[in-house]
Image (cartoon, rainbow, N blue to C red; front, side, top):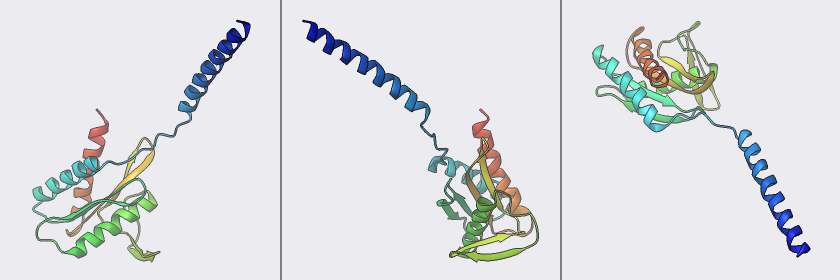
Length: 162
């Protein structure tokens, strides 16, 4: 009888200890902030809507939290080169955590990735001080790429302000 009680007591002790350890380990879990495909679609559609309001046709690129391509498409009437420029703008704004319209015009290639600064249309997506992606827009002249990218950022911010 004493042996059964001792084993029973030990089992209860380890069960409680194990639950406590599991609860503590939950506090240590890193919660990755990730850009879903659904959110990328909503951002891109906001950009497309703004482009249509401006009677423009653009290439739209959305990158995820790792800087990988999440979504890319061309509006009717645009060429593939617009998509390549949009990708370069998105990648540049992702890597530098700033809009691409800052500074003097520069283009360079790093590890087969084209980057560009000093042009409109690239903007990072930041949520709670964490870079979660980037937008790249290309196909208009002047500041319209920025205006279209801003529509995507506004949609992104609106979703998370609720």
